[in-house]
Image (tube, rainbow, N blue to C red):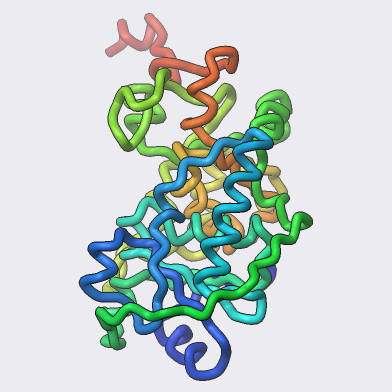
Amino acid sequence: MTDKVLVTPAELADMLKSEPTVIIDTRDPATYAAGHLPGAVNIHDIFTYLAMSTPEGVAAMRDKFAAVFGAAGLSGAETAVVYEQSMNTGFGQSCRGYVLLRYLGYPKVKILHGGYAGWTAASLPVTAEVPTPKASTFTIDPKAASILVDLQGMKAAVADPNVVKLDTRDVDEWIADSSSPYGKDYCPRKGRIPGAVWIEWYRMMKPSAAGPMFKSAPEILAECASVGVTPDTPVVLYCFKGARASNTLVALKEAGIKNVSLYFGSWNEWSRDPSLPIEEGLPFKTSSSAVAAA
């Protein structure tokens, strides 16, 4: 990712005047209907879709989103700009849209930094008018698929001590108290992928007057250093279904970490296969001497 991915509201306003652009709103339909960026197309499936990384699951995901993005008017000539409500209220769904588009090989993808909240904080116009996009043929480029790893790729990462497995889920999932954001028992098992380290996805952001924004590159690199990640460390991210991990992927890439990929099936897939190993309980053990000292 050499080009800047995050665009400010002012930069997007200028883009709309100077180049073909398709804006994608990832929020739920009711929120979209109440007000959205002018011309924005609503694709909430970017957030809700649960992917499986079997060959059949990958093919279904590719077919579905190639059709959805084509219907939104993406032919390859336009810049796709994806947004959510704000960077921490959509569980990373705008970044998940970025990852999906890059995975399918779309050449020009941006994320509105600050989302809808940032746009309105800049006093830029919104509308309730629903556009009618001109459908285009969306062409999949299979060479771009390296941004994601499938189940076999995640198994290989688990077996490789040189690859950092970075869990970005909320703390209750990391400590194996809950299986998902959809409820503690949504998945059949609670725990972690073996060997994983943890940075909760919120830690990549900080408050601003316009809402949560990504931290600076030095700040993100400092967070990464706390779990042994440097700009040259190979990293595979996961969360529950790839949204929060997509947010972290964008943060790490923007900060200059070179080799970052995402296990899109994430905990939703891994936990459902009882043959796959997991770590359960608290991610550390308290020694008897420490207890006695306390």
